[in-house]
Length: 236
Image (cartoon, rainbow, N blue to C red; front, side):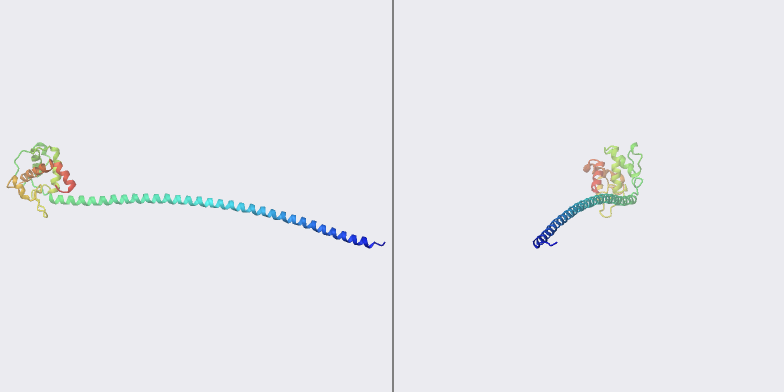
């Protein structure tokens, strides 16, 4: 069978056109598939990025919380250490004060012991009346108690006078301060002042006590007034 050349050419062209159309359609489908795949990859990447961001934020939150807890713990530890240090310093200070006080008390006792060479009444005997309220004392202290009452002071004042002259002379009528020259039970300076009460001021405890009581009354009103002044100033 013979084919008309014209129809042959038409068939070839039609076939070519078909192939071309098929290629275009295939290209379109392929492009759409690639676009769809690219879009899917973008969604996956975006989801992964969001997840990574959430994980990062969670990590930062945990890290921030951990740092805050650490700072709080360090603050508590520092406060505890400061309190312990303050307590230790207070104890050390109290102990130091106690040591100083003990040394001072020991020195004072030593001084009193050295000074308290109390005489039974001195070489000049006391022949005045001794009230019953003074019988608990002896020697120069007993004379001092009696003369104090005779001066018009109540018996309640005698503990102050007793402490005052224990500090000054230990109630020793021969006590003499080597640095100042003060003399006798009341530590008169100069000692000769006591001659206003008697020429025997160097050897008679009663003469010294009378002068001392007059000095106390004239300057401090009472033995307790003199003792209070002595405690604040170290002298009277």
